[in-house]
Image (cartoon, rainbow, N blue to C red; front, side, top):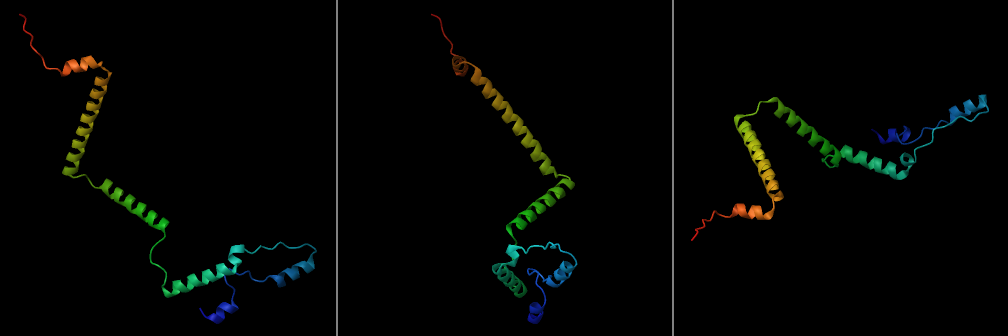
Length: 141
């Protein structure tokens, strides 16, 4: 892209002049034709300067190679979903099956212990203490 071409052509942020067309339309009728208002941000000098700087840096390769945070998060989620689909397709190994069954047994055991401890809490204290005492033989004289 030549500097001469950029000065002669219209940029994406500038509004092309439509004055010649509007004058011809107004001659035929007394109505004022509506015109699209320029975007205040796109028409500002700061935005144009920033846009030019970004384009220049992009052409020269000076921009950082890192992706935006949102793009990184989306890529991470996409990779995780792909891994889960692959794991779902392949059959589990013997080790995984044994580990899963062991985990289920441990969970069942923990639930039973929890129920037993809750059942003991509902029992009066003297009954719990009596259950913990060893059987003491008493001798009658």
